[in-house]
Image (cartoon, rainbow, N blue to C red; front, side):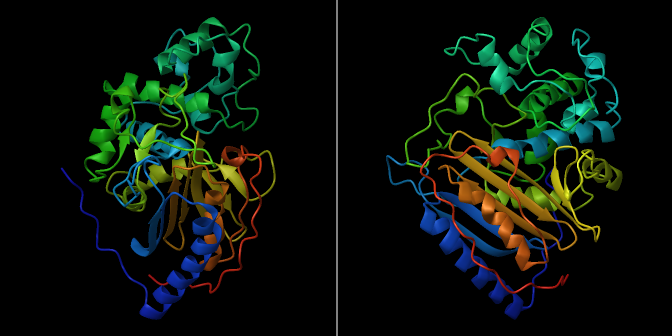
Length: 379
């Protein structure tokens, strides 16, 4: 059964026009003129202030990217994995503070709970490094089950294993294991659970979890020079990545997260609570969400992503009901600079996160143009 959201509200014409013009200037300077291939949406109260698509879905043809072109959202996939786990918790089907070994008895890492997987405090090593270090045959795809078995059988020789809940350490392994947990608890595949719980009820018609059968239809990604990125042996692992979507579908996801249609208020309290408190500052991580927490109490909830040539940024200013979504299929570090657009709606700082530290040689930095005006919250 499809869920119907309340109608989105609009800003006064003058404010909408000023914001659209400011975003257009930023877009032209920072993205369009820097080889952007993808889509950008900026919305307030669910009303789209700016929407633009550029570039090619296939650089060997004339297939242009449009509003119905699903692109790899990389680590923004973690927001779906986290909320799927929280939905199972909300439904009384799992306990966030149970150790993973409760659900997988052979898992031999004491103290690693569902919560420490979700907030990246598990102390586990990152599979994107250890599968290669353990001599995995690069001609064979790694599955989620494979990396679980390597964690169990090779624990004595794995590097970078630390005691859980000592510190925050961003790690894709956590979310690959959470995808297995979703399957174990729900009795469905990860893909089917997300489809029946989120994608279909929300009518996210251009969103899916990638598997090998989708190879023919999936839009490829490209490096910053426009060379097609090849699949490698890690491309079948899901939960941490491998969801394809569009800016419009992610705006639907945002509206679901801004309502009580699927989740209860106490579920959001779990998701948006800060767990990485050992370092002072505004930056933190909840359960599947990065966040900036300002002295005023305001929060910017977001997640970024990078995999091969795909970049994504999904930003939500909760108090101002603002959503900023950018997805690209050609590596472009400037996609992460969409955080600068938050300054149109208040005094919000931006910074670079771990997903964004891999950058190509010969990429030059770009000074972000000043933005104006700041529009007060009008609901």
